[in-house]
Image (cartoon, rainbow, N blue to C red):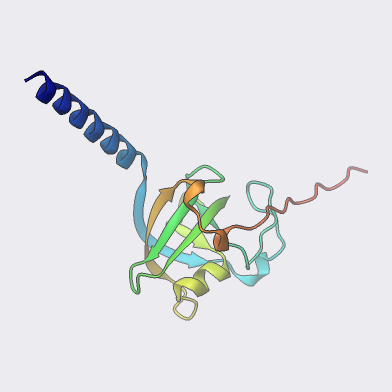
Length: 142
């Protein structure tokens, strides 16, 4: 009987931990767009240089550096991007991707697509989606 009680306590504890881990992953669905080429080389909200050939994105509220798994709901293509810029609070889109991200999700021609976003740990990001961070040089004061 004591063995069964201990086993039940451990099983309940494991279920609680799994529930907490699942609850910490944020999910969101909505429309995705991608940056116009005119922003290439400009500074982002966190001070990085924007590059069309990196897996980065703009989001309204998530902290800079947050990694997202982005799934295109039309074709189930998946990419991983890092938040380094801000969308306006008034935007009707949930995310703005680099051109590379839009190409991998296959929505460049249409310009918009429905996506599902899920926050993920940086440890879970495949190497092909990582790139060095390039900071924007500060202008020298005269």
